[in-house]
Length: 137
Image 1: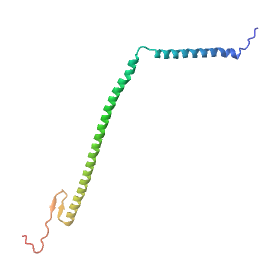
Image 2: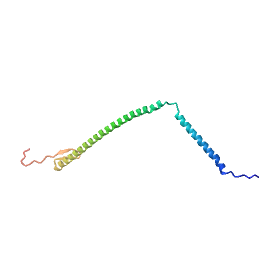
Image 3: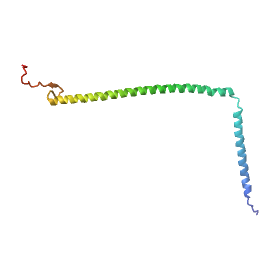
Image 4: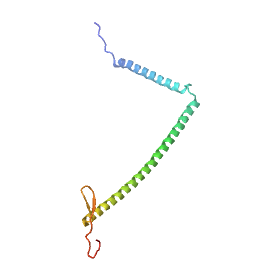
């Protein structure tokens, strides 16, 4: 019977190291090939490559100016609307104060007996009692 000798650890790791180095070299060559292909690609000229960004930049600038113009128009409208709201609010406050004054006047006239307001909203004027010496017959 033949006895098997144990395989040394160096003999086990040597094929793994060789495989790892081979894969690294393969990937490195693939990356180098892609880089060289991109560098020497003749499908687009340098003049075309130089002018394309400028054309899109001009179009982008025009669109940007249009949008800025719209924003400024909307901001102007917003200021106008805020002014209108402020004016309307001031008018409402004035009308509310006038309404309160009218209510106080009506209440004072009712308390003095000059007018009476019925349930259905009719306003009745009271005749003042004749004073002594008045000849209003």
